Structure formats: C-alpha cells, structure tokens
Image (cartoon, rainbow, N blue to C red; front, side, top):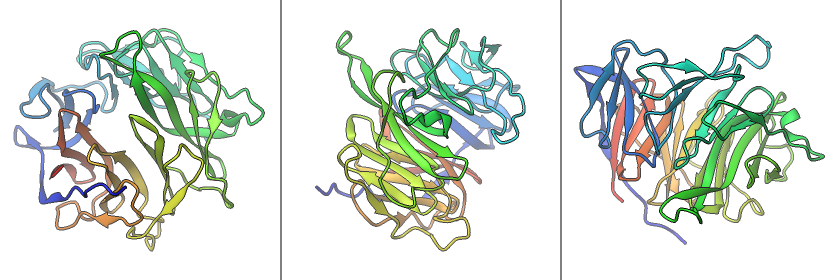
Length: 336
C-alpha cells in the first residue's frame, strides 16, 4: 500500500556550534544523544540536538560507533586497504563519551559496524575476511565465518550492516536482534546480501538471482521492525524486496545515472518511520515512498550538489534529519 509522502521543508539550514560549522554528527536512532565535530572539537547533545555541550577540544578520534543504551560507550577502528595487506591498528573503546580511549585486545584490523541498542556488551565488527562478534564489550572476539558450502566470507568483504529487531522475551521493554543483515562485495565488484538469526553461526543469502550480479554494493537499509523489507544500493540503482528476499525490484528512475560514477555514487540509505526512504549520494539527497519506483531529488537547498554520506534521525525527534555532507552538517525538517 502507498504511504503518504513526507515532504522535506527547504531550504535546509547548516548546523553551527560556537560559531563554527559542524563537519559531522554521530548517533543512533534509538538514542537522543548526538555527538558532533566542529572546528576539530567534540560536542555532545543529550536532547536530540536542542542544546549542546563541548566535551573536549582535543578528541583522540574523529569517527566512532555509539551504543544507544549507554551513549558513553564508543568504539573506533578501521582496517587498512584490504588490497595491499598492510597491518592495521587495534580497535579503541571509550567508556566516558570520548574523553579517553583504550585499546581492545586481539582487535587489530577490526572495524566496528553496529552495536546492540539495548545490550551494550554486544558489538559486531569486520576485517578484510570475516565478521566478528563480541558479547563482552570487546574484551574477546569470535570470528563468524560462513561454514556452509557457499563460504561467503572467504569471497566477500563486508561493507555494511543493519539489524531487524523484535521484542526481548526476557525484557519486554527492550528489543532483541531478530536478524543481522550484512552486505558484502567481492574483489570483482559483485555483491551479496545475507542475514544471520544466530549471531553469525549460520548465514542465509538473499541476493537477487540476476546476471550479472549486483555490482559495487555500497549501503543497505532495513525496516528495523519488519524483516520483510530490505533495500540495498549498487552502482546502478537501488534494489528492494517486500518479502524477505524472495522477490526483488530494481529502482533507478529519477537518479542521476548519467554521472560518470554511476547513479550519483549511492552512499547512505535509511528508512524513515514515515515510510520514506532517504538516499544520500555524491550529488545530493533523494527520497521515495518505501515501495515506490521513482526517486525525487530534494532541491533548492545548499547541498543540492554536495556529497551526502550520512543521514541521522532519532526516534524521539524523527522529523529532523541530520545530513553529513561535504559542505558540513545540514538540517532538514520533514513533515510526518
């Protein structure tokens, strides 16, 4: 069924703190806490961005993953290019909101992907080969290779992850992971989508059965409360399934597929509670109804041609979108 379109209010406004343009925000939809970097300083808001406080003028890292249940818990790390095989450093963890950091054991080359929003001890990471799960806050890590005949993670490097939630039977006020979805890309550019319902002990591939295979996968998006609805972007457009991967539809109408880098280089995608899908690209922000076939560009803004590589909103203030762009953080208010 068609869900009423949420219309962006434009022009959007740039976010400034203490007179400085904000370069990037980091948060989680399940938390009202948002972190922001401006002038090389780290700020924090505890009320969906209504007010901000300076944390430190000398942050150790400039990128991290935040836990929604305890926003003081942050993870930061990245691996070097998987092609050159250069050694990578360890993952870092902060338990005081980024004021100080310490190295996690046996974590060299691990990149944090997602943390459990109600169980801060569970974190998912990846290196150039496999997915890793920690259930003790990063003190120990267990690799989760695909041991099936397909051996997915021997061929594909994980590029994106997202989760679908269900009610926690032990704690009804909390949510539990129903499925963890990941997108992977092989050396030849072909991509896959797979999910696990048991923290990586087994995997089910749901990639569209087409030839050639989806190529250049960049981002995946889910309805976090319905495992049937999945989206992922490749170099030519966005794939969508309404039934958990049994049937896939391809959408590209309205996207700038005539650009040299493909469909505007599709970078980041989220499903909004209004039913809209928002897509950040090399050339601005696009949106469509969740099961629609046509994309519409958000125009008449300061970021029409900017690179939009991150989109954040919170459940408690979902009508305000924070866009991480090449021109700084832009705020877009939508009608729900």
